[in-house]
Length: 530
Image 1 (cartoon, rainbow, N blue to C red):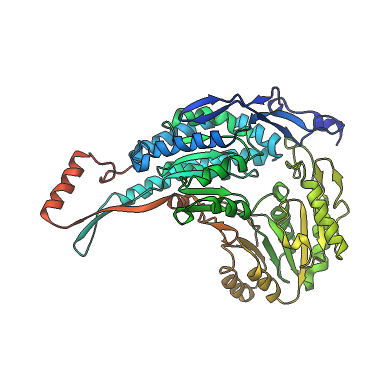
Image 2 (tube, helix red, strand yellow):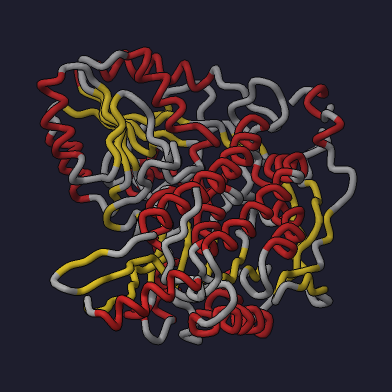
């Protein structure tokens, strides 16, 4: 990179390191005096490459894990705690207080998103703002849910007052690629519904939680949100073994989810809310609008360097147009700008995982040895903290890049003559999150859409795969997800329908009327929030 790349705007400079020595337990920011883990950015500040030291976080283990777990269990108190029995209105007020305090930390969090995970400035700002919007949308959906519940139903002589209630104690483990947004898509609905939580941030993107610790402490009652730092194995494993976790909320890899689930002594009692890996394909039909398709595939494969579960990770192109598509697409990839996250127009940024360039190289070497070629001139060029996106063709099913979720800048392309080929591949795949379908003939698209809707959970017509808008369902089949993480559905994922029932007679009706008049029950009431 040229010398100008080392000129950092004042507002994005790291002027001091963050020595995170506190964790949140029982409403207290408790000081940690044990071992710490150094946090480095793969962004270099010098011409000779060197990772940048950002700070450190506590390296905690089993004793601390069990400490925060016991606090969360105590706060829930078998459903008798202050938080699970609190009025909906009051829980919402706590959440509104939190988000207002969160908004004051925007610049700090955005800066750390860039430095910790290499996300571009526009995408970092978008992640923060989107998370704020998500919280407000979740609050509004909760109000609507509460309004719908503020009534009695009568069936076969039985009156019922049905509401959604909490499940218990939640273990929340978020991902590094969206360490704020996707983590909060687990944590926020979980606590809003009356559960208590133990939250461990991802190992990358961990410092950005530091500016928000006080907001959590000041906004919620003691023990509702407990935040701990350290390695997942050292913390999550011991917590699960106790059998005291009611909900495992995780965005990550299915192997991690399986390992944790298996450690729970009563897995039949464990609710799972999981966002897992995917191998989302693009299917390009002969009549596809090539310019539009290339633009969408470019964004789909390389937005945030392909480090998204919703990224396009394999591209199927019809034989009739494969040559033209490959040439144009490869040329477009090489026009993308690489640089530091705050630079204007940057699309490709340093990879946050130091070992990722070497892993991508392994996939490349395997594919090349089995007959694939790199179509773009820059493909595979190595830097200390990056490897240039490689467009690979022809890719075959015996290649690692076809079978593995690459989660990085490498794009495998396959050709097909019969649409049955990609459909069969998708049916046989372990994953089933999304697909992008490019074409124009409705008579060809219609049967494909009908089939694809039963293979994945979102069919994107002439557009790349994506999560948003957050009000739409976000889930997957097979190894890709358990439960749904949209605004609407997540409130249901972290709760259970429960109700008070009574036979329709004079005694019961008088009791219900008195309950409503006196407002002595937070459950049996017909008040609602506008």
